[in-house]
Structure formats: structure tokens, C-alpha cells
Image (tube, rainbow, N blue to C red; front, side, top):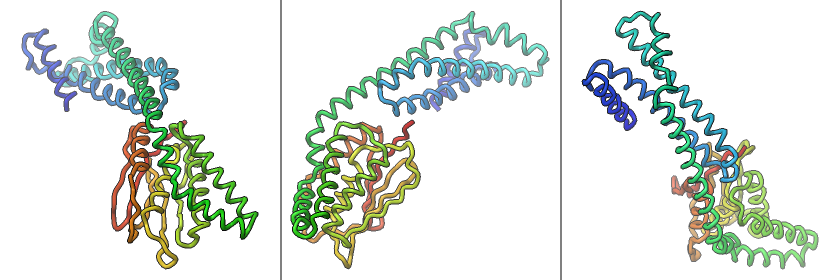
Length: 332
């Protein structure tokens, strides 16, 4: 609506300067032309901004020049097509001879080289992409600063002391019962901490790797709680999808920490996919004696997700279920 209003004002100014009457019927031609240019040009600009958000700054820097040329050519074509359609419509409306249309377009309407539109269009395109590049650069700098600031708190939140304590207790029992099983348990525990440490400063990781990590983490929990807890994963195709590392594991661990479970009433955690989101859900089975929670893990996760994806973590309670949606990123 804003672009249409702007097009109307500009069209009336143009006609006032040309014929002294801003409300002449011919004002419809520049209004239509400008409206098409602004709407399609604006949509193209928004589309390219959203695409640019998905690329890290170094990768965007390589793509900025080709994207600038493509954008300029597209806007140039949109301008030519909209002007041609506007003039054609006016010819049809006034009943003018269409044989004059081509001469009118070539020598008067589409002669961009002899008017200021060509120059202003070039200036706008360069300025637009420079701002886009600058924003990407600032975002990259902000991400680096935020990673350093949250690095220690993230690690504390992700490596839950309760999980480590319970794992060591389980391992202590296995050592006396089954040495081979205990060795396997140690390998899994080692792999979990290796994954956490290796990806502490990683912005995004493939969804496949994160799901494998969650399975390893949950298998250790099953050693202790066995048939008291269940994990169901149904996410379909995962190719070219990425997620914030350790994000799904934090939510699974959060569900285990805050909900009661027993053989008669097991806790069932579901991991599913809905369009561009991974959903972690569980029935609300509050413990009679809830554990103290600082909510540092969840708060840090929300910060990391927002910085890495420009999207919000979605939390809600619905039909006695606690549901959290984590945004996914499509990667090339």
C-alpha cells in the first residue's frame, strides 16, 4: 500500500510538471508503470535480502557482484516491460493506432540512455547491494562477539552435571557387571563430549549429525532408565538441512530433567519435522519434587538460534504437551 501511494504521488508530480494538472487522465500511465516497477522491484529486493541472510559473510562477498548484475538487469527489464505495458494500455484506452506504438516506445518512452532513470537505477542498485553487504558484515561481527560471550555459559548448560554424574554411576555398575558393555558405554560417552567440544564454536551443523548425536545421548540415558523413557524420531528427508549444534540434545535433556517417568508411565519424547522446523515434544509429566532450574541452557539456546538463523525458537504448551520448534536452515 505504501508503494502504491508513493507511485500515485510521483505520477501526479510528473504530470503537474508536464501539463500543469496532476489529475489529468494520463496520470494513469505513469501510475501503472511506477506501481509495477515498485511492487515487482520491491518483491525482488526482499527476496534477495532473505536469500542473503542464509549465506555467511565470506560466501556472500563472493556472490555480491554477480547478484548485483542480475538484480540490475532484472530491474531494468521490469522497468522496460512495465513502461511498455502502460503505454500499450493507454493506446488501447484512447483508441490510438497501434502502428505508432513501436515508434513511441523506441524514440520516446524507452530511451533510457538520454534520461536520468538509467543513472538513478544504477545508483540505487549499487547502494542497495552495498547496504546488504554492510549488514552481512555487521552480522558476522556480531555472531563472533556473541559466540565468545556465550561460549562458557553454553558449555556449562550443554554439559549437564547431572547427566555426567548419572553416567559415571551407571558406568560404575557396568564395570562390575559387563566389562565389554562398560567399554562400549565409555566410547559413547567420549563421543558425546567430543561432539560438544568440537562444535562449540560451529554456527550450524547438518541435521543428520545432530540426530545421530541425540541417538547416542539417549542410548546412554536408556542404560539407566531403560523402559522408563522412549524416543521416537520421524523427520523424513534431511538432505541439505542444518541446525544449531547440540540444540536438539538440549531439548531432549530438558524433557528428561523436568518430567517424571516410570515403567507404568514412561516418558515418550518425539522428534518430528514440520516444514522448516524440527519439533521436540513430550507429554507434561511434572515431577512431584521439581528440580531447581536456572533455565540457562534454554535461554542460551534461544540466543544462539536467533543469531544463527534470524528466527525465533517457538515454545508452547498444547493438549498437555510441551512443544518446542527449532528452525532449520536449507544449505546448498
